[in-house]
Image (cartoon, rainbow, N blue to C red; front, top):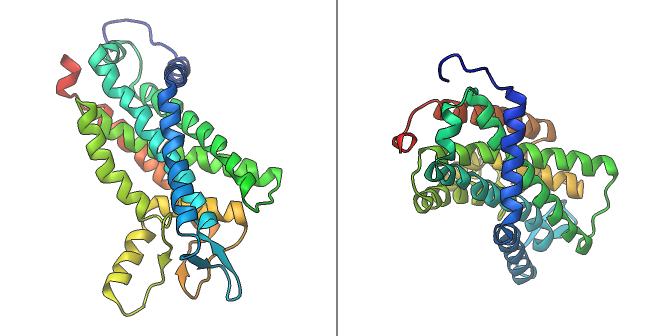
Length: 278
């Protein structure tokens, strides 16, 4: 902040930047189609392709189809793709000079981070809700309360992933490098979240299975996928074959992870980069 310039309201800055992200995203229809189209195609391709050869036990007597099992993971994948797409604007704003203008304006850094994260989170949540229309093809019966709870979970999860995307984008000077790094980080997080295959139980006697269990267990996306699945189907996987966290544990992990990643984004934002002086 410079000189004796009057301090701009943090709420106004946050709202303005969030609204700017919304307008920019929905003006670019190719980004909307790309964020929803790829996960939708993958859900249909893998869901129907593996439906007869893959099933997951919910109880001793019943199984769930892979099409149903894979749907929560596809929903989380949309949130992840949208977080990547929206945080690219950090790099674009720096290249266009807009970000430098915000940095020298009499505003707090946390307002800028909050505006970017809030805008990206709302976009991701909206696209996730649109994807829920696919549940018309699944046997899902839910109440209004369940729907509102699911939307809240999607919003918090969107904030968590947008914070991660923002933290990486702030250090990048090219969109190509950003895509490479995000694919290296987020795709393994998604694959090891129980989205594509369940979390194995601990104590099987196989070291690889036990290591995989703990890696997936500490992954925040595992708790997002599990919570979304439980809200959609109100059934849990067979505890004899797979591990699944409780609902309250998942909520706590998601909230803590979101706070930690937002604090990380704030810390990264306070550091000057070479691109800030261009």
